[in-house]
Length: 211
Image (cartoon, rainbow, N blue to C red; front, side, top):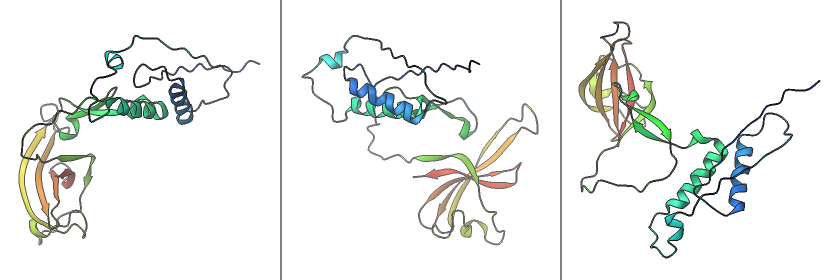
């Protein structure tokens, strides 16, 4: 009896056009090690596409930047070869109403030079959790200045600012509507958490932190 034959095709791309055969073999080895075949292999076929040399490759005496983007691309290509193409992504903005729906992920092919804002004032960074985490309930007698949000090591809440209302979905159905009351909670150790109260669930959640 003839067994089932399965054909697998993998596309492995180096960081840029190269003549280094060892570098290509390393990428192939990483892909087969990280994503091994499901069964015994009968045959392997390898082919490569040739391209013209880029302007950067021809500019042998050009001044090298402080950050080696080519080395960064090579490191990312190794990650893609070992873990798959979806292992290297970057965040992009999305047209979503809720904070967790306002961004998404897309594949990162090449590293681009950073373009920081030349402002002298250092901006605050709001780091968002992948999923909002439920918080312990607030004791009525404690009020806002004694609530433990993140354990004893971070201290209790010393100041809370809000609410900032985010609501939506009420135009589709009452059951699918969302009503959140966002607050910034400053803890005794100095941490600033981004929390909200969900009216439908009647519970507090932590959305992220401000650094």
